[in-house]
View 1 (cartoon, rainbow, N blue to C red):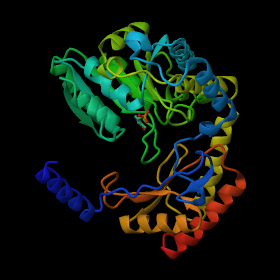
View 2: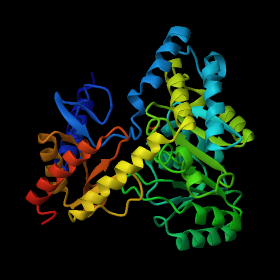
View 3: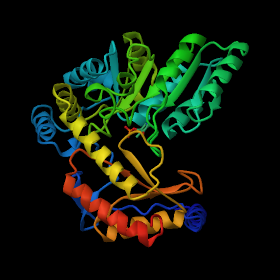
Length: 396
Ligand SMILES: *Cc1c(COP(=O)(O)O)cnc(C)c1O
């Protein structure tokens, strides 16, 4: 053991602790659902991305178990060698069908889709124009590329237009606009129609990260392109199975040549083993459920409207969210942390979001709705949030 190395690490950790940058991670001791056991205590869960409750859906679980019986536990290889199973191909076909695109490529996670595709799609001499609040996996993907990059102000179309004008003078090979569809901290939505129109005007390429839009926005949860009626006009769509679909896995969809290019070039696709059959089968089952009916999506929105309406009535500042992500603003970090503690004592699991995830004076509790929450669950949550909100003087 290198003693000096471990001493240095301990010093670094101490600094993180002093700056309050250390995670206090709680443990889920049951399935991920509207309610679950958190650190030994039954809680209403308000901070999971499992929007539609599909993580513990009987049909999804059954598909997973059957895949284990038929195909075993692991795939045995990377996709390019001996690890492409018919399940992976079936899933890709179904993703393309669901997203109304020509084709799709399945990655291990959303993170590896972004961090693997972007360095290949952005070449030397290209320019990437990125929203300032984009996800870390986009930021890392762009960092790994040899292209130039520039940041536009959050959702600001005038600023984006200016960047595109500047790009014209810059004589770039390819200009790629990239944005999250739904921004996970505030729950606001990128103005995709305007972005697509600007891209068409300036002959730029569009790349949209629909991680929080899939299963939530659009017809049957097809995502943000469906929501804004711009299907077929976005060049590259990326998404994940780890959120509303309740499983795990990322994808990129678009034309077949995009898939072919990426599977030959993406290191995060070529150099990592493919998903276990149980995972691919569960993703297929989740997609099948959404294709078949949109009841869960409707229930999610019903819950969202109800919960937001009640909190607004009580006078809470719940930000500018347009999605099931509902921030309860506390402004001060201390209050956000205190509120989270008090909520847990009352049997509600919701995490504080504080600096550096958001600006110093924009601390909040971030809640997320779930289709498996009942009206009683939401009433229970609102009652406790009201009580604690008064104690912390967030409302009168
Ligand atoms: C969660 C998320 C990802 C990463 O997805 P995983 O499949 O969990 O790796 C990428 N982009 C955005 C915007 C996300 O919210």
